[in-house]
Structure formats: structure tokens, C-alpha cells
Amino acid sequence: MTFRRFALSRRKTLGLFAGVAAAPLLPPLATAASQPRRLTPAPGRVQLVGRDYPATAVWAYDGQVPGPLLRYRQGDNLDLELINGLPQATTVHWHGLRLPNDMDGVPGITQAAVLPGERFRYRFPLKDAGTFWYHPHANSAEQVGRGLSGVLIVDEAEPPQVDREELWVLDDWRLDEEAQVVPGFRDSLHDAAHAGRIGNTVTLNGFLPATWPVHRGERVRLRLVNVANARTFGLRFEGHKPQIVALDGQPCVPHSPPSDLVTLPAGGRCDLILDLDRTPGSRFRLVDAHYQRFAYKLLDIVYGEGPPLRDGPLDTPISLAANPLPVADLRDAEDLQVVLGGGAMGRMMSARLGGERLGARQLAARGKVWALNGLAHGAHDDPPLFVLTRGRTYRLRLINETRFEHPMHLHGHHLQLLARDGRAVEPQTWHDTLLVAPGETVDTVFVAETPGRWMFHCHVLEHQQAGMMATVVVD
Image (tube, rainbow, N blue to C red; front, side, top):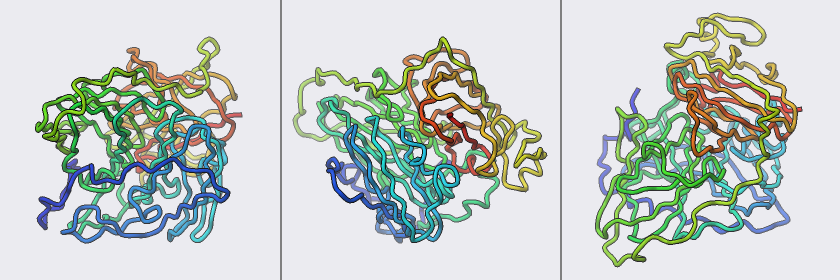
């Protein structure tokens, strides 16, 4: 397995990329309309890696990679009609949003799959401000891996004072020497049993990044979104001190990233406030160092030569107002436990699949190499992991007995992180996609808020389709 930034070397690539600033500006807020907004996933072609390469054949929302940014105010209603232009069934899952169960976009569980040429209308209120994203939940590994993802921003009533705001959508792709997506999304048991489909080409907002032009004295809000199938990003802003103000759309106490790495698991988001206080004309590296042996420079932060915007940083608060999440009552909390098992070099000897206990080789022959509490997910009517009582607080312990990390995603809810390996985490943060390291035990708490059958799965999409997926029922 390689974790190189990109592996396209047959043609010259120098001098092709103007930098992050060439990306489109964030669009204005959506306005109320009597008709729903339309969103069409379909095959298309985009220029991912520069003009010296052929355009890449992708699947895209409205012909864009990433898909169109959807932007609303907190309290607005989303009203959107999906029109399926793909050669296979699809849905839209609204990742990280608290919403009615029948709007969650999981075929066979919350809705019927939307067949080619058919339509489905999503309508629900936007309870929380924050940075969220949308993607298919039908054949997810292929559909997301071919380009289907987009960002949804819900603006808070009183945003922090900044000089500008930028959205960075991070993705990785597995491309051949002609810049085409390598097929085999369901054929690689190696990917499924290891770290997932890690790509060889990293893009930012659908391009290969080179530089990020900035000015001394600026305060910037960066919204970071990881839409990759499997890759975790660990961003180090050399020479700078970013402050994390929200994770997975949920505000938190502003704090510096642990070990100076802004960690973004697959499906995760992070809002940063960055005061740019270095010398005009200087430049600094932004490094992705999550996989230490394969660290690489993502781009250069380049200061302009002009006069500074101001002499010192803004003296205004950067904290965000909390969203109206339900309050956990630890006095009456019930304990739950989920053991993550399987994968290459793992200790899983057997698991239940479709009501039958099978050995590891039998499971692998059926494409299943992962399990949650000994259950390898094989069908949407598998029994749920848990049946929960609406309004009750639950302490959930995640125990990773595998050799690989897993970003665990609970639909429709958020987990408050309490401890890692028995050590309390400060500040406590809320997550819908929580990274669990190999061999790690993570303690969380949440309130079973909205009734329905909710997905709970690893957001390494190859792990999900290979068994690390289940449901949780809230009655």
C-alpha cells in the first residue's frame, strides 16, 4: 500500500496549478422558493489533475466535483429533489444532520433506493448550524469513490468576526497514468481487509493544490471536510497556531489541535480559526503527516508582499454558540459496548452472517472480513445491535480489537467523547464520525433522540461493505 500524494508522472505537471485561491467563492445563502432545489448525480468529466492530462471520467452532482455547495441558515428547511442520472440506484445521505429518520437516505432502511431516472424529495428542518456534507448511501464505496460528494453549510445566527471564510474539501483518488479512476471497487479483498481504498492523488476543492495566498494580519475561518473513501488527513500548519472551534459541525471550546495535527478521519469535519501573523513574503508548508512514514507537503502558505491588513490579531471572540443538542443525564445512563473485530492480522476466527456462524475463510469468500460485536452485516434486515429508549442517555464504549483505525459514524446522533484508553479527554467534544485507533478503547455518551432505525458503521467505505455496519433502533 502507498500513501503518496500523487503518482501521475508520465507528463509534466509543474506550473499547472494556481493555488487554492482559484477555487470558487462560497455561494450566498439559499433563498426561500416554492419549488425544491434539484440535484442530479450523473456521469461526467472533470479536469482533476491539470490540462496536460485527459479529463477524468467521474460521477458528479450537477457536473461538479465536489458537488454544489448547499448553504442555509439555522432553522431553515431543506427542500431538495434528487433526480437520478446514474446507471445504478442511489440515495442522498445527509452526513451529520439530526433529521427525521425517513430523510436519512439509507436504502432498504429509511427509504427505497432511487432507481435510474427516478426522483426523491428530501424535506426537513435544519436544527444545527455547522459544516456538514452529503453523499450516496447506495453502493457507497464506488459512488463516493467516483466523485459523488458535496458540502452543506448551515450558518449560525451570529458567526465569529473574520476577514474571510474558506471551504476546503479534501479528497483522494486512485488514478491510472491517464488520470482515470481505477476500477475494482468491489473486487479488492486486500483493500477491504486492510486500510480501505487509499488513493494516490489528493485533491483540494477538486484540484491539485499548490499554494494558498494569504496576507499578514488576516483572520480566516477554514471549514475542512474529508470526503475520501478511507484516507485520514492529519494537517500540520507549520509556523501557525490554528484554533479548533467546531468538530463534525458541533461547536467546542476553542483549542489547539493535539500534537499540532488537525486530524480529519474519513467523513469528518473541522472548523478552524487561523490568525495569519507571519512576515510578508514568507512561506510555510502545510503538511499531511497522519501516516508518518508517508508524510507529504499538501501546499505552501504564501504571504503577500503588501502591507499587513492590521498590526495584530483581532481582539474579538472566536467561540461559536452551542447547538441545541439533547443534554445527557449520566445519573440514569445505561452502558453499551461495541467491539470492532476482523481485518488482516486480526483475531476474528468467526462471526455471524445472516443468522449463521461462519469461519473466517467462509466469511472472506462472501466478501465479509469485519464485524461489530461478532455480527458481520450482510443484509438490511439483520437484527439491530441495540434497541434504545427514546430520550434515555447511553454510555457507549468502543473497543477496537483490530490492527486498523476506524472512523465510526452514527447516523442522526452525535457522540460526546469522554475518554481514550481510560484517560479523560479535554475539552470534551461532540462527533458524528469518531476515529478509533488500533487497539484503542474509546468512551462516549449520547442521548437516543429521534425514533427510527439508524445506521452505525465504519466510514472507511470498504470496511462498511465488508461487514463493519449495523443498525441501532430508537423506540
